[in-house]
Length: 203
Image (cartoon, rainbow, N blue to C red; front, top):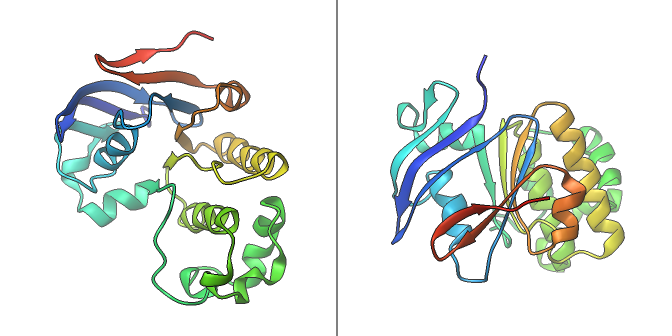
């Protein structure tokens, strides 16, 4: 049964139309110059900004769901995510601290970070916690905007290992990255956003 994410004739904000697929259980990396519209593309797919075109998971059209319901299936994680409460734990109301503990270890985060004040977190800590916040929702696809841009090498590799585990469980990924090395490590399809649209990047 087709469970892939299909993007057809997607356009908006002067960008597009875009045509490509994100496969279930695989990673598609998206590169391109700063300002070329990579974040806009992810936000259009997630139905966070107006767009035209056809976006669907298999035969299930985005237009058949409400915005929040679609984003539970196709979850966008910004490079700098928003925080709506002062403490970290309030952002994880669907999970207990004990359930989160193994994931914190995998992401090289201290186990007491859930009791921390958001304003006391480093950029890298906020970035990994925003990713964790999305993962625990159990989406079928993750749209990640430079998920390791604020991380050191060891933390970057830890995030990539976690992403590979998610792919093994069937989650599809669309990852914006400026790192060719990261694209190679994630071992998926590679596309580049340029003035003429999307182009495939050969291995």
